[in-house]
Structures are given as C-alpha cells and as structure tokens.
Image 1 (cartoon, rainbow over the protein chains, first blue to last red):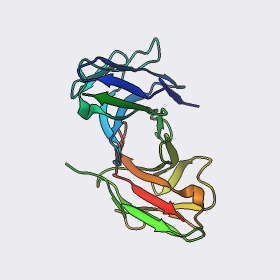
Image 2: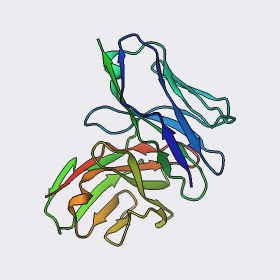
Image 3: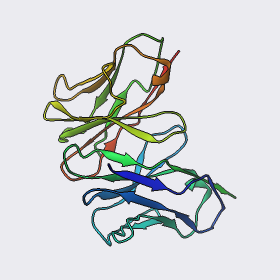
Length: 113
Length: 112
C-alpha cells in the first residue's frame, strides 16, 4: 500500500535558520502530494500542494518540489520564524477508489529566538 | 471561504457509552472521510464515504464504528461502545474530485 516517510524529529532551529524536512513516499500510482501544518491544539491546515512531477508548491515562504525520480517532496524554508513552530505532516492522495490521505508521522519543529 | 465544521469540539464520555461525532462538509463536496489522531501521533485514516456508501475502511474501523449521511448535509461518526483507547482527536474531511481534502477543526474525544 501507499506510505509516507518523514525525517525523524524533533527539529530545533534558531530564528532565521534554513529549514529542510525530508519526505519520501511509496505509491502504486501517481499521487498528489501535500504538506499540512498543525499548531498546538489545532487542526490540520493545508500548507502547500503539488499534483504532478516537477511542480513546486509554495506558501508563506515554504516550498516543496514534487520529485518523481526520487519519490520525494521535501519541505524547505529559507528563514524560519518563531511562529513557524508547529508539527508538519507530509501526505499523499492517490485518486483511485477512495482517494484517502496517507500521512507521514509528522515532524515537530521548534524555532528559538 | 467555505469550511468543514465539526461538533462538538470536545466530548467527554464514559467507557461503554455511545458517542456521535458530527460534521458538516463543504456543500458541493462529494467525498467524505473520517480520520483520527491519538495525542502526539500520526493522523490515521478510518473511513471514506462516497455516493451514500462506504468506499474504503481501515482495520481500525471495526464493528463498533459506523458512519451516516442522514440528510445530505451532515456526516456522522458513531462509536457504539467506547473504549479508553478511542480517546483521540477525530477529524472529518471532504473534497471534490481530484482535489485536496479540506479538514475540519476536529473533535477531541476523551473516554474515561
């Protein structure tokens, strides 16, 4: 079945540092890929998405590029802020049959001033 | 902007009791889902619902669980006899064809 593997956390960075959170996936077909962010005590917010190879999703300074050849969708941000502290989930959807989301384990990011 | 809503935001129940979690998906969406997240863990798929029937369910979704779309707007998850291990955040989601899922804010279920 489908699966998503995220780099193990937690990740602690200083403000203005560069962020990379690795995500790789396994899928039988051609999935769409997503990053969600979850702030403490809150729900899942869609951060960005990409639907085909070489697409780059971007939002709020975060970026991720759909790499079919390496089955990866790594999240990056050039300069993190304290307010970026949250849990980040990589996910995929294969639009066959039920089209459910498959999530990675989540990576906790803490940004220190 | 349209959004998925869920009620209640927090439900406390005793072990063995039945609970119903309610969701109102976005009105033109066709595919509906329930997920759960045990505190500090990953988000797990429970069930998907399309065209008034279950299209897929996970191993977690055993006979104690059921879903219903009773009136064309609400989408409910029922747990017949709650167990301590059912304590989790439950998220409802919906989507249109070949698009991202929109998640509700979640219902925190606490079973005592």
